[in-house]
Length: 523
Image 1 (cartoon, rainbow, N blue to C red):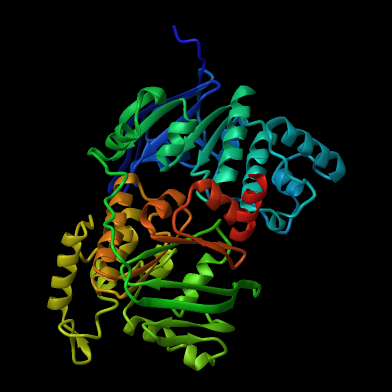
Image 2: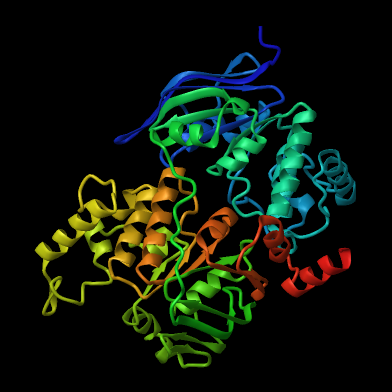
């Protein structure tokens, strides 16, 4: 007889959308006082399942039990009334309001008179109980990403959640913040809460989860596996149906001449605030140079400035000795930057795949020829040779394993992994001298990650210079020849070999020289 009480039971859950069977007779059981990981490839049905559990979708078939009672969850309010809350990957907070105001937002009480100092104290006490310290009077925009996540968790706890669904909770956190989060999750379990932990990071799943359920193509691949009896390789095999290599073979090679030199770059973000503060770096042929940093420290602006998508106020971008972009140029000149960058042999894998990396409503063919439609054989005078365009698209679809019904399919219908393969196919097939890869594996499953990383290493072997901007430290450490750490638009230091602890300290504002000095003193 199992000593654990089942808090949530899903039985025979089926959900169908037009042309897609998202969940096919899925069972899932969450016990009291456990962290239960939910794994699966992109499109495996994880989001659909938790959307059913939080009342956003209603199942076509199956039953949901909470504490043994069959329930009908018609909305997120119904779900929270039964003690089920979700912390989304992208936080649902109002930046200009205080922590307390965000936590109270949408509640029936207080209705007319709001004694904020009274509620500030309640929030403070709740934070101390679960190790979620945050200033209740601070406005959201003043908080770090890790602190904002604490507010999201406090919001659910204040509403009485006994089951917390965490969707990719470590995606935007530094290593030290991840440790703090895990300590918080364990304290919540000790208080009798239960957690559903959704992640693509198998190392973290192995470290935090008690049991694991795996979905594959909408069906149950494995239910309730004991983490202590599994290996990372076992889980990857359950997810993708084959063995996955976690450490790819990186050939030792000597870098060539400098391909990219960024000198004293200054640029503003979308709010008109300084995002890059005199940043300099360089990348040579045949090397991958990583840029590590917590989200929002200038990485997006850096990639956009190098590729001509964002104006710079000072500094310059030099490719193969040619100044492509220089601070203070007129708007008319800036409008030609993107074309100059493309003509110089620069490829760009953007952070936003849907709105920047692709044209969602255009076909696979149109998206794949975007950088080559001006050259023959695709270009035929002022028109496009559709036969050549389709031939090229079919060839790239096959070479890069883009899983899609036909090359006429709109790009918006592709999964995250296939969309990323499409972008990589287009950018790599141009045989780039320089590649700016921004979060190339974000949100991808282990099989797709392996595929993308192989392509990057192949480009390195082919002599391309690659600037890899990523928040995945393990990825940066395994792929990069050198790593720059960025914090508030400045480079904190450059390391050849590093460990997550050192990188984490630099990512939170400690300069490399200060780190060295501190270690000398401690010795």
